Length: 114
Image (cartoon, rainbow, N blue to C red):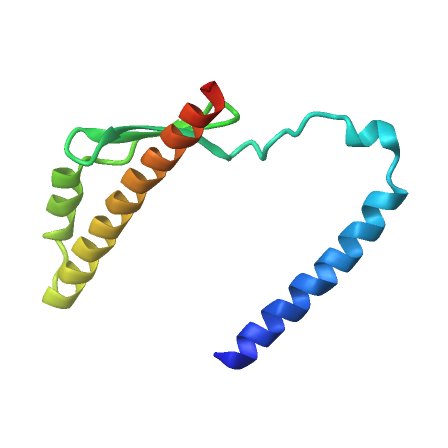
């Protein structure tokens, strides 16, 4: 673990050193351009795990994963108990993370509107 922390610190310092040199040499006009996120950046999450989530991206596309009950029903089709438990755990974590992402995006949007 310590080995990874040292490597991460070294990479961070190297990135900062390279990044600061790149900023000094950049054209001043380029620094004024507005930031445009990656097209697949998630900009909004709607819904909940019971009624279904909607995941909206910067490029205008959207994904609608199955509801919690539909996803759990698909898990029951696995042959082994271990596979069913793994599937249900993945679903629980996936929907928990979507809920947290939705709260984080809403919080960020509330801060911007102030």
